[in-house]
Structure formats: C-alpha cells, structure tokens
Image (cartoon, rainbow, N blue to C red):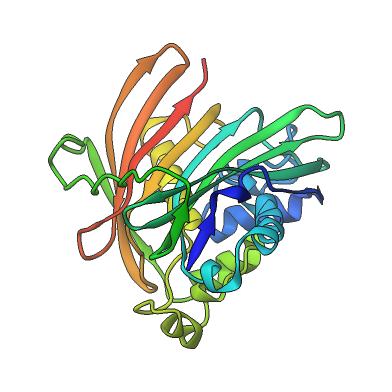
Length: 287
C-alpha cells in the first residue's frame, strides 16, 4: 500500500458550522469540566469554549478530505501522530464558522507515510479563529517521491524531558469513548466498538487522541495557569501511544518558561503501563 506525494495541495471545504452553547457545554462536560465558565449560560461573556474545541468542527472536513485523497485500505492504518493548534480567538456561541482543509505534506517516514493537513477556520466576517496542523501516520504504508525521516523515539520518563514538577492521575472510565464521541461529534468506531477495534488490529477500544490531549490541557490549566479563561494561543504535542478504555492516564507538568510569544508550559501524559501517550506537549499562554 502506498500514498502518493501528489496528494499535496488537495483541499476540502469550506464546511460551515453553527456553534452554539449546547455544543460548547457538551464538549466541556465530556471532559468532566465543572467550572461555571464552561457551563453557565448566564455568564455575561457567554459560555467559554474549551481550548481544544476546534477539533470538533475540524473533524467533518477531515473526513471529506480523506475520502478524496486517501484509499480506504490506507485510511484504516492511520493514527493521529502530531497536533499543532493556533487559537486566534476562542470560538463563541453564535459563531458561524467556515473551515477548509488542505494537505500540506506527504512524506515517507520509518513507520509509514506521514500526511499533514492544515485546517483553517474563519468567522462570518472572514476573521481567523483557529488554524491547526494535524499529522497522521499511516503505519506500514509507503510514500513515493518523499524523503525518509524517522519520527524520534518517545522520551522516557526522567530523561531529557526533565523531572516532573507535578503529576496527576486521571481516570478514563469505560463509557468515556462513547461520551466524547457524541459530545464532540467525532465518530470513529475504534473508540466505541470492540469488534471493529479488534478487527483493525488494536488491542481494544482506545481513547481519542484529542480527548487525551484535552484532558491534559485541562489539568495544565488547573495546575499552572488561571483556569478556563487563561488566554491560550497555541497547543502542540506528539502522540506516542494508545490509551485503553478503561484505564488511568498520568499527566505531568514539565516546567514553564518565558518566550517572546508568551509563557510556555510543557507537559506530557503517560498511559497506565507507564509508556508515553503524549510527549512534547506545549501550551502557550499569550501576553
């Protein structure tokens, strides 16, 4: 199986999305959030979007683009490998967002073909709301006409990542895959259907990578920032392993640093077997 580098430049969209308070609250609730900022419709500023909410309205466009550019047998081998979200502002209830997706890279790497998609979402005035570079690794798939660049091995606990400043164990309940699927409106049966997951070669149903990342972001904001309303402008990470359902995830804070763009908080997350689920996590707080 192979992916052609000729898919670079393929686009999908625009897809239009009506964002309402119900969707914003449902996404926060799926993550176990109880802060009034996420749930109180009487809040003067309106219900606040979780920083990772853009994954919700990006998903339908991702499905469209993959259907146009990735063969079905290849798509079944895809795993979420990298995520880099730039928040120009938080989505708000009442927004009418337009999202387009473009394949910006397709290249061979040691584990398989790496495909990078850029999602660009603007509001009804054409002003940018979010931009995401979403990387998928198609395991065991070749890619023609592209350089081979191995993905670095996960950083082991206590090595170059540094000793954690704090850690928190987060339970992943048996129903979370179903709850997150419905509240985020992101449906992939590997997260909810054991028969499908096993047929796809997985050990069991696994949690969405974006759910693991969102849970980690929430914990970082509770521990190292001013809570939900913290002005998050960027979230980035690499996905290093699977999170089984049910299980426990341990999120670790790896320190903070001042940068010209703002305060950068580093974090990772370990699956219940101690292996990395998220590595190189970075959350940037604006000036």
